[in-house]
Length: 383
Image (tube, rainbow, N blue to C red; front, side):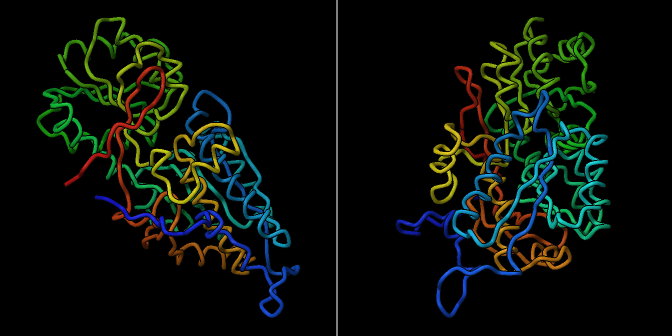
């Protein structure tokens, strides 16, 4: 399904329209005045360092860009974004969540970036009435457990899994698909969705472990299956050496990963073996984002937006709009997030009662590794 973007903003960037100065002005004089009910601190957590950081840094940069633009437009409504590096590890994310929840200066949370750390910390943030808005945690379970804190501006893996199944059938014309996951909340979850969608194409499956380096057993199973396609659910740290070992063993089956591999580290880690690999993602190519986001990002960081850059901008903007509306209490901000209903740069942002973004606005793209870069290939049509 296609979306309509707000393109008709004239010479004014959508980013400026979304986070303009109106919320912290004196309505009588039109001049900006200090407001006792404007501004605050947002926490953001995720794998900002470590082997999988390349997947997360663009969304962090998108969030930082949104806050910077807001502060420039609203000098009397100061917002601070404080970063907490979890390396994507639930064990590291949990004490950080307790620290954030216990510090009353924090009024909202951008994250988690990964599904496992989100699952581990959701109860902590819910108990503290702290709204979470994730730019990239996609496991369907996160919005199926009744948690009141968690929201995401990205589509979940039910949609991505269905799209991948369509891609195997209609684009690759696969006859046998071998499934591999890394045992994480995210990896096992996305492969579960793909398995349900490919039906008779299923040729076998195996699990690997985080930090595993030798994949001889998995390579042997793939070879024995005679599969012509492989679906891998997980992250760069394991996927890159696995793919190298598959190719070294003479296995030429098409390798398809998901948004967990939309990471420059996957390409560099797998080297020549990565060429031709496919990555699906419920995230936009840079040139498809609304307004001037892509140009603003390029100007700020010297590179085009990567995975979830636009979604990181949108996640931050939800909280910035809450501050602009004068919300300064956790419970009030949580209520504001639940009722949010505005155009973003990645899609129209409106959450359902579970915290998922409007499913009719979600699209899935296929990307291909070409010439050492992850290049947009096509949107995957689900109907």
